[in-house]
Length: 279
Image (tube, rainbow, N blue to C red):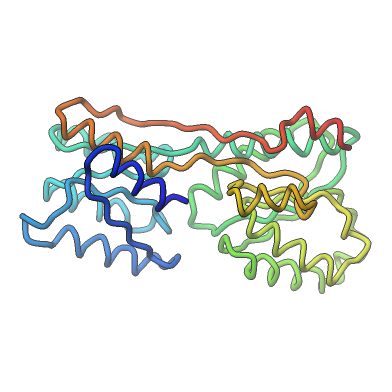
């Protein structure tokens, strides 16, 4: 969906857009980015639009890109090194275009509060430890659950895939400490991991199989379809960032000043008031 949005924005703005996938491999992604940065000057792109697999090493790549005169548009919220890059290279666009990740966690907390008005315990499936998106979503969730009577029983890690979540939950369920544990909902930081967590629980704890499961991303053939089928209770529709990023680059090439950041917002699916009526 991100790729399709980027290509469509390129057609609208008259820009040639090349989409490269890193297959969830941070080292491969850095190598791909450097291949553009070190290309002959007449073959370098006007800008690199990056959805980072990991924040590790991205600052160095960004500095090399901007030094080579290539715009840097990172699809990551609150990236601290961007301010100094803008000061050092005022003629090169350096921007973040991202969804408010803490707000995602906060909305997930509001979903859980709507589903568990009397309180309870939740199992959380997080993304990788080195992912700023995962960290900030967790911060928003923890803050949003304060004084709600809802406790995070445990938080497990996945790598955004269904298989990783299924493996993590399956291993966790084998622990002796889970036998008498009460869990009232499962909150996953994306829909794929929610699906994997649900599969593991259905296989290992049939008494939890009717728990509400929530996720995030809300793709039409992903999270939204899973909500419609009853596989998930709720998700968040996260807007794509690539289209707005391509359009921003197009405007800068026409001489318009680039903003420091563009912040987009996710929405609950179904709406929170609908969830409250479903409980």
